[in-house]
Image 1 (cartoon, rainbow, N blue to C red):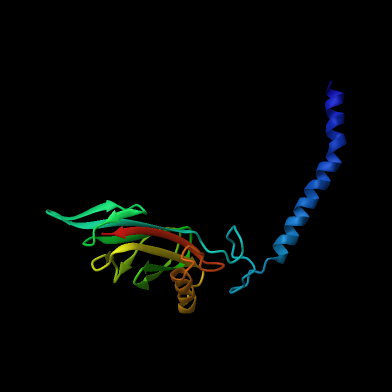
Image 2 (image 1 turned 120 degrees about the vertical axis):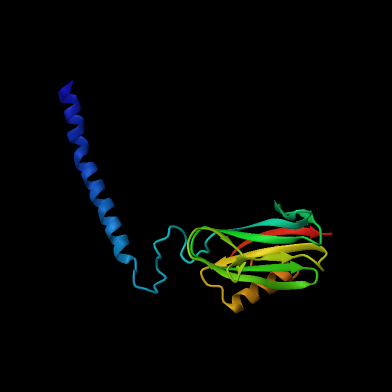
Length: 188
């Protein structure tokens, strides 16, 4: 019984050793091909496609004036909200990324906020270091809010996305390498 077990191990040993050598050699070739110089776009150390946008989600709360002060409730896309309410936005980023929040309504499209997530996690939309509520007063009907996320979101890229989202293909993605999350409310 011992002889059969020992024979089986010794018979597979050369094949296992050869497989291990090939695996190590393949990893060494892969590491040698990665360009780690600053500014290189070959590999940034993050798992996933090269240059792919970091996933980001847009969340919001509805703020209304109440008898004892503001009342805040969690928002849900598709909700009907009164025109005297405001929306507080929060971004959940999967990693460092540039961000832009756009409002798309029947009266046009506007860039509401631009920011940057330094790391993965939640980020409140702020102005001057304070959470900023977007007032709905003066708006009516369907209002879409689009969150754009990309490694680089310069003004020309935001304008391109704004035109595409505001056009006839309002549900279309804003282009390659730009992440998109949409929420919508109906203001009455």
